[in-house]
Every structure is written in structure tokens, then in C-alpha cells.
Length: 411
Image 1: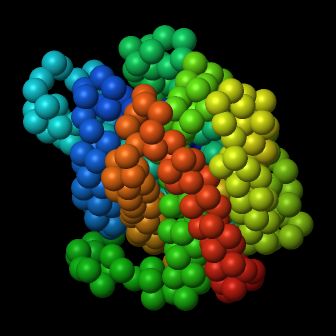
Image 2 (image 1 turned 45 degrees about the horizontal axis):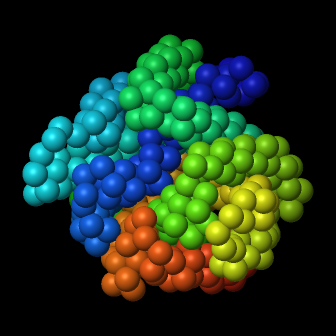
């Protein structure tokens, strides 16, 4: 295997850029897009997102088992995912003119197509990275480069959408997916043992095998609580910026500030993980995020500078959320002696990520609808601010306490 120098890491990690270009629109733009352009009510959008994400979540362990059964031939599954992901993304953000019921069906079908392609590509890509090295000093570098490329993709998606709309976003995504996919498949370092297929049968006990590890159970519980804490403000960001702060025109710039800060923080979190351990560094980031983000609740119309400062400071903490959990998971896999089963672990891991997103959308959007909040109107913005700022901070503190007690410091 070639040494993991920066060129090799970039050949592998750059594929995180187009994957992140999918993630931002799906998790941030999609609710507002279908509320304003298709006229779907928030409660209906939330219910549809909840159903689609739960369905997608239960597909992910199956995808992990399928990839594991193919051995370490991760490139094959990335190649299969590319056309599915592209078709679903273009269809989702370019719906035809239909009646409400047909629009909802189109929304659900194209969203599931995106989830299928995204999950297959993500699980294969993350498993590929976990198989590149088992050295603790190298794990955070692999995930850090991948997530830094992902944050670049998020910033690119936000900038292109602000300047060229969803047509421009689709073109930019297609170009980035083609270029990064070609580089990954043609130039990236292959894990040792690639192509050694496994003749395993599908069994629910095999799919649930990661939960037999106490370290994985503890890390997975933290993932769920912290994931919901992060997903709620992501789902509500555009509504909060437009209706609570009256800064809808600045939402693209604020997102860019947030994700640029996260990208710039990656070397810091990698260094802190090397000095104090990944678990301690991540816990510190959670605590810092909660202490900063809680101030968003008191902001009112026109508070551009204070909210910009909150975006930058909480963005710095986001870097740890992105780089350190996958590195911790790679450590858990290595500690269990299951290096050849990384895809099964990442399949369950992505199931957890999908569940956090499902819970965030399925709880926050209908709850705001019941509290009287209507996008584009004045009423209900206090409830919006509470859901956006206070609830995530409480969950972050809970996740930090769970991580402190988790048996992860020796991974």
C-alpha cells in the first residue's frame, strides 16, 4: 500500500465534496423549497421526510452487508451509486408541474432515489477510508481530509445556489460528481485485499453484530443524541434566518461563513485529537457549541452581526462533529478486531445518521406547524427560535455527558 501522503489522501477524500453538495440541499434547502415552490404544508413535508428517512435508514444496514459481502471492492459500489445519485438529485430539485398529491409522490420517489445512491456511495467511501489505515495517528488525518473536502463542497453548494439557483447547483453537482468520482476510481489507493469477496448469507444477527460491542453501543448512542441536536438547526436554518431575523437575503452568506469556519477548524481538531484523544476533543467541541449557540434564541430582526459571529463560532465546533466521530468509529472497529467488517459498521452508522435526520424533521416541522408557525409570516417565531436554538443546546449537553462516560478513551 502506498504511504498516505497528502496527494493520496486528496485522491481519496475529494469524493466527499460532491457527496456534501447533496447533503446541504437535502438537509437545509429541501423543506423550504417544497414549502414555497410546491405549496406543501410544513406538517406534510415533515411527515414525508420522516417516512422517507426511516425507510432509507433501514436500507443502510442492508447496503453495508452487501458491500461487506463483496470484500473490499469499494470502487465497484461507488461506481454503481453515481448514476442513481445524479438522477435522483436532478429530479428532486426539478419537479414537473403537478397537483399536490402527485407532487408529494414525486417528492417521495426522487428523495428515496437520492438516499439510495447517497447511502451506497457514502458507506463504500467511508469503509474505504477506514480500511486505508489502522494507525491511531493516521485515522484523524484520513477523516479530516475527507471532511474538509466535504465542507468545501458544502460552501460550493451554498455559493452556487445563491448565485445561480437550483439549475446552477445541478450542473455544478454533476460536474463535481464526475470529476471526483473519476479521480477516486482511477487514482485513489486501494485497501489491501480489495476484491476478496465474502460468501456470507444475509442474517439479521449479522446486521446487528456491531451492537454486540459495548464501545460501539456507547458511541452510537452519542451519535443519535448529538445528531438530532445538529439536524434540528440545519432543518430550520432558512426559516429562522428569513422569518425570525429577516435576513433571508443573507442566508447563503451566513451558511458560507459557518462551513468555512468548520473547514478552517479541521487542522485544530486533528491536532487536539492527537494530543488529548478523539473522545475528549469531541466532547470539548460539543460543550463549546452549546455555550455559543444558545445565544441565538435572544436574537431579533436585523441581528446580522451577532448571528454571523454565532455562525462562525459554532462552525468552528462543527469541524469536530465531522472529523472525529468517524475516526472514533474506525478505532472501535480496530479495537474489536473487525477491520474486515468495516462496511457492516458503517452501514449501521449511516442508519443512525438517517434516523437522527428523520427525527429532526419529523419532530421539529410538525411541532412548529402545531404551534402556529407559518413560513413567511410573523406568528410563531418565538416557537421557531426555541426549536432552533434551545432544544439543540440541551441535546448537545446531554450528548457531551454521555460521551464523557463512554468507554472510548482507549480506542
